[in-house]
Image 1 (cartoon, rainbow, N blue to C red):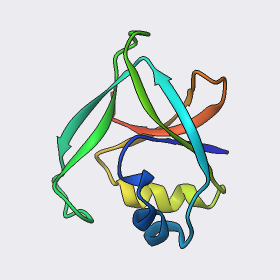
Image 2: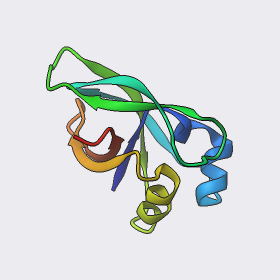
Image 3: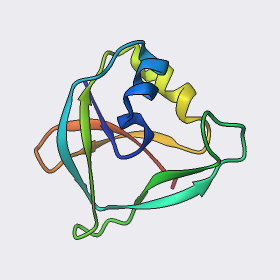
Length: 106
C-alpha cells in the first residue's frame, strides 16, 4: 500500500513521531491537483497553516511529491495526524501506482 505526500509527512521527524520509523519512498507526480494552504481550526502539531491538495480535474495541474510504502495499520495513525480538515482517498499517480492521499474535502 502506498501514501502520496506533498508536505509535512515528508519530514523525517514527523515520520518518527507518527510511526516510530523513517519511511522509504520515491519521487512521484499527482495530476489533476494543485497545492493550496489552509488554516487549521483545531490545535495542531507544529503550525496553524498547512499545505493541502485541491482537486481541479485539470491534467495540467500537478503536484510533485514523494510516494511512500506504508503498512495498513499506518492509516489510522495518519487519519489522526491529518485531522478533520483533510479527506483520505485513493488516487492514481503518473507512474501508474495507486496511493492514498490527503486532500481538501470536496
